[in-house]
Amino acid sequence: MDRSMAIHVVAVTLLLAACSDAGLEEKGFQVGPVGDPDGSTQASGLSSDSLGFPTRPSNVLLTGVQHVRLATIYKVNHRKDDSSLFIGSNNFHYSYAEDNAGPGNTWNGHLMPGFEAVYGYNLVNISHFDVTISQQKLLYERPVLIKTLYYPSFSIDTLHHVPIMRKHFLITLFDEDTNMDGHIDTKDLRRMHLFDVNGIRQKDPVPDHYSVISSEYDPGNDRMTVLAALDVDRNGRHEDTEPVHIHWIDLKDPTLSGRQY
Image 1 (cartoon, rainbow, N blue to C red):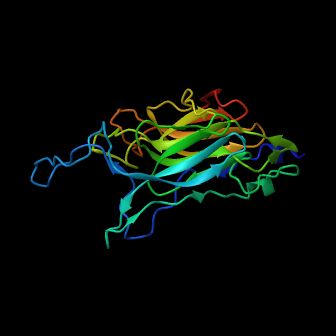
Image 2: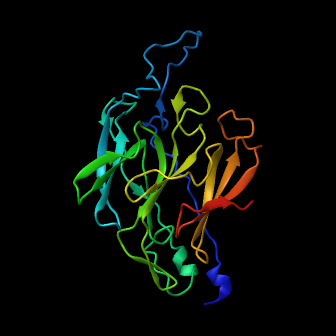
Image 3: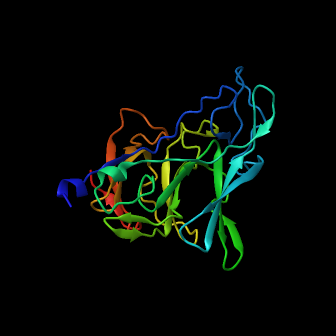
């Protein structure tokens, strides 16, 4: 294989498409009281320790780990125009970068071999079900705003002729009201979490005082590189003037990660 092709870096965007439906509210949810224009505070806001809004499951995700099935959990929303109820639906990121990665690479349209990538409007949790023991749990005790979930693909992808079987989950998300504005939404720091196949959270690949911007996939080393902005002033929001660093994640063993720039 051409060496230059083997180290070809495939751009992978982690940014979601903006919602074009004018009847939809901004993504996210309230986690504390918010102020009226006259300076008073509304007591009706959801407190940060309850987040008591209704949720519903959407679809079951078939993973490449046969005894593990996931389900996406969405916030129940009200349409602005007629107040009808609805939940988001699963959308998937696709890429055909394998065409540029050389022979022996069958990724089945996935952003990275061995991973499906799902997202949706107000996706707030993931249900993990172990078929062998009929045990279900949520990955998060309280709702979070999930940007993208990467999970082991049901299809068997190949990387340089070698079958790829992933056994972990990666999630980019907003999990905390970092800017203290009373909401968890896309104005907060965007973080990345790692879970093993049993749904147990591991060490974060990117430290939580960064805000994830985008990522790339390196098929020559089977690594994911993540661009993230350092929250220098610790004000909990991503600002264009803040320095951007590059972090790497070894997808063969994602507990191995570090900073390369």
